[in-house]
Each structure stands twice: as structure tokens, then as C-alpha cells.
Length: 111
Length: 119
Image 1 (cartoon, rainbow over the protein chains, first blue to last red):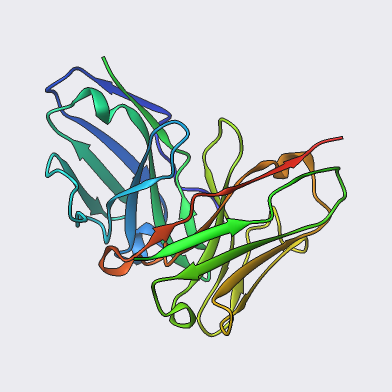
Image 2 (cartoon, rainbow over the protein chains, first blue to last red):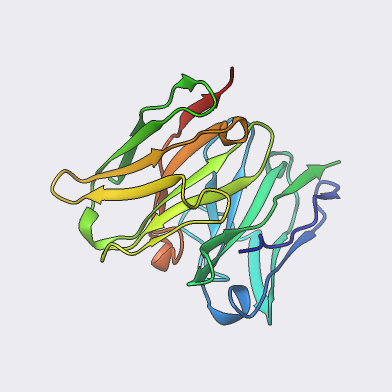
């Protein structure tokens, strides 16, 4: 039941791209294509940005993209904007290994 | 429109008990897995319980034996019974729908309810 591993912080200048990683195991990320990414601004409810590894809900800009390789998932934010500054969390279905696991969160700073 | 409305948050002393409720609407409640997720002040997200449509339940070690998730499909309501509460259980508790799979992007969060455990 260990949490997924994310870097605590990431940063980039406006217009640049930044990638946030999320590492798990074969029992969660590596075993299922049910990785999601959430964006959370202070005091707000988490907002779904990516589901099923790489799919975007309607209304999420295509500047947000994601992928998975083995036990590691990644979220890339391109063309950074000031409003992208937030905490980002990955999640993965984990079945009998813990049902759903969260990453510890990455604070994205737009310089 | 999917709505998840939590209630029951309160201020209580260590060792106390509390039951949270989540009233669900806008979807066929009985057919979805439901999960409680919490967020301590200034901290990250942590799942604290899950229940499948068939009634199977899951808990992390941090709450196993103290928390019990249940559902009443006739009332479209999810519950979280919390016993032997500790200061570290202080958090906003979110009711969530189907966040394990989030199949088709069909997953949702409530607005949360605050539980404070303090003497």
C-alpha cells in the first residue's frame, strides 16, 4: 500500500514545458491502464486533468498530455501559463493491493 | 449532473467517534465503486476507504480496524464510520465516485467535509 512516488516540486517559465513523473509498481501503475492526474489549486477540490493514462476530459487544454512506461507515468504541461501553478497528483488503480493509490503530490511553480 | 454532498464533519476529541455521510445523485449509485479520500491541512491526498458495487471493502493500514465504509443503495448514500479518532485524522474528507478506474473520465468528487480531532 505504498503511495506512488512524485517529485515534491517542479518549475518552469511561462511558455516552457515541464514533466512530472509518478512511479509505482507492477501492482498498480504497471499492471493497469487506470492512471489519472489531478490538478488542485489552494482551497479547491481536485480537478481531473487526465484519465486512463493519457486521455483528457472535455475542457482540459491539449497543453496537458500524459503517458506511461512500465511502472512510471508522466504528465507534461506545455506552454506553461500562470494558472497552471498548482499541486498535481497522480493516482492509479491498485486492485487488491490497495484499491487506489495516490502520489504524494508535486507543487508546480510557474516562474 | 452528478452531485456528491458530504455531511457530518465536526470538532471532536481524540478517541471519539464520528459518522460521515455522502448523499449521491445524478447517477445510478448502486453500480459504482465509491471511495473516501482525505487531505490533512497542508498535506497531500490519501484514500481512506473504498467499497465496490458488490460490497467489497478496502482500507489502508492507517485506518484499518478503526474506519468502516458502508453504503445504502436504497438511500443513495455512502457512509464512513470513524472510531478511535486521532489528531492525525484531522482532514477534509472527500466522497468520491469511481476514482479507482475513472473509466471514461466518469469520476467525481464532492466538496468535502472537515473533521478536526483535537483536545
